[in-house]
Length: 131
Image (cartoon, rainbow, N blue to C red):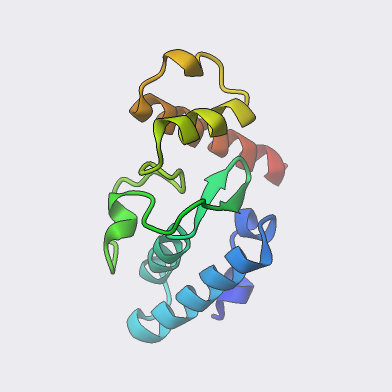
């Protein structure tokens, strides 16, 4: 099935460039691996090189590069990811994202705690947007 028909809701609320990145990577992965989770993982890995998830949508990153260890892999296997949070970004960037999302206690958090808190806030925002 073409990626345009399977576009995740978070991407529907995202810039056109993010949508096109995901669709192109998804459709290419379907040709290579067939339809299914592997195509979706590959499309998200490609997306995470230029975009990061903030709340219920994806935003352009300041620089290009994988957002986490899973996105670094050419053909990611199932496993733990940062769920679109740019875990490779600076602590200051993560703090700024946490501030935009209204995460309390962020000033005392480590970089890893900021990533986890942003992931949780993103999940809540996505669930709320689906309602």
